[in-house]
Image 1: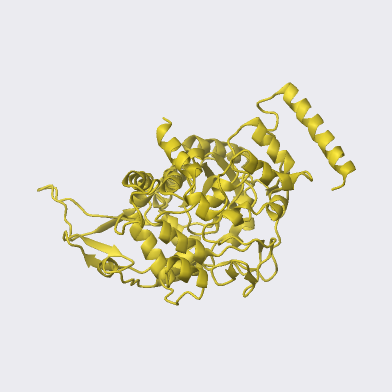
Image 2: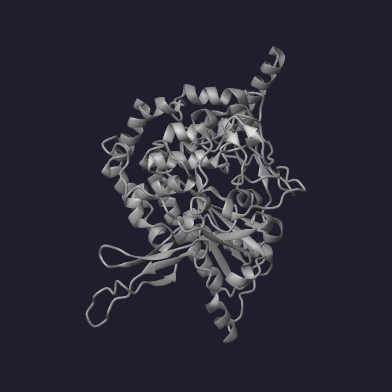
Length: 514
């Protein structure tokens, strides 16, 4: 940019800022910057064939015994297969296996207890949905009504909060109850969005299934399980051998994949997908990658299960069928884009206008026709191409520095090679899911560093809204620098961050502020 262009842009920005501040300072830049699109805003090639859930990195952790050929994973974490990394991660989350240093701030028993309790509603009532299990079942044990004792050797399974059981809708309609008829699809959208936010979602968008069905997994996968009699005589069905795990051995039983079919499993063909976004706690995310950050994610996963369950119940009471989903069934980020909630980003997360990437997503499929939203763009792609802060900060070196491009099988990037866990045929940035999961196993909780350092991760204040405007101007390369000047996100270098005063202060502030 030459001097004249610089002064011109600066003058226009100053004038706009002054006029806005003179009228409504608080809401000066709390504006809709998004441009609506009739089509998906990133290139999807004719070669795009969808994505098989069996190949998701989490699901490969139940069947893929092939040794890692990534020297970074082998040297940094000493994990040898995805099965090993996945089981270590799960064992640390459940407290079966200790973290490396449980005296360290952010990894203490106090921090672990916070994380585990935050995930508990998801874990107890939507078991495995975060790993991609659809229509999940909750394993429990009946109580003998005469003695009040738990019948430990007789496990039973009950529908979870993400249940796809629509049998009550069929019974209701069979007994003469009518479907509630909205005036039109737009009125349906108004009431569905109001109800969804009332139940607990922070953002909600609608995508027509006809447009969104390509993001449904081509096959749905589920880990195979076997029964084990535990030391307390309870019978548990598990996808791994718990006794071998205690000895440092890693055995799983593979997965079963079936062609995706809503009619077969939920009893209906979808017409609409309702996509829900939930804001994670800003102060908790600042503490990434410690267990305090993982607790902030877990609270939202628990809230996702509860809210999606309520929304599904609402739709069923209106006479429509529903399939509530967490991380399962379909790719949530492109669905959120289809539903107008935001754009994708270098880190692979959806970036919303209001909360940046600090959100978690779930969705509810239904046979109710609802007026859809359109995809929007507001400069994220262009900004991510020049920022690269998340790639620099990623402790596992999973996020590439190369520009967004159509991903093809076999391509190589600074962070590794494209394999079956990467969706191909779509324009995006490459992320190495194996490295990410390997760090989670080492860390004992998920990470979230990319979210914490992102310049879009800001609380709702007018001066932060001003930064949104900057992403649409030639000043956008300066935003990362300004972000760091003002201390947002903390140290970018991964090793420095983990030992920094910033991270210690973030954890202490989280616990000290009531």
